[in-house]
Image (cartoon, rainbow, N blue to C red):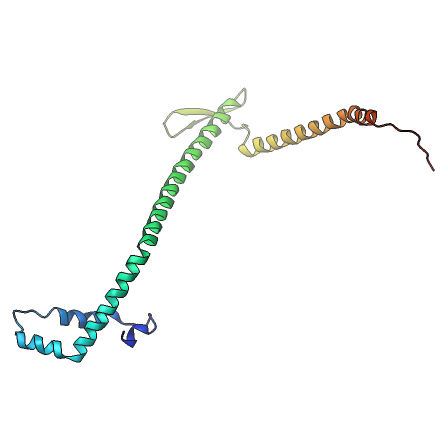
Length: 182
């Protein structure tokens, strides 16, 4: 039977005095205590109750460890997998940021025609020329969206242009005997 103190609210449970009491009983040095006093301790009902509670708790801990060992191992494996994926994602983000920076630098140097130039040092210490009027990334994105919309309109025009021929093909298969308008 387990002591009722173990079933109190965990926030109010004071483990330190309990541990000190149990350790104090277990840490009795055989050299300083005579065998008779140890035998007297074994006859003490409080000591017997503590030993019984200790056995129940140890059995419960062993039972939980055996049952949940596989779950714990699976959790550790999953945490390791997540940590590995996180580090890979961080490396990918760093690589993508470097690519974006390189693309921004190359876009700035490609559009540097007869426009005013400025010198800029990059991380490597080399100077690159960029223009004050170079297209920003946002402007390039908007231009891309505009081109996509134009292509969508052109594909719809192709469908409309092919519509009369398709209509004739569909009508040619059927026979219309007579038509009356009222």
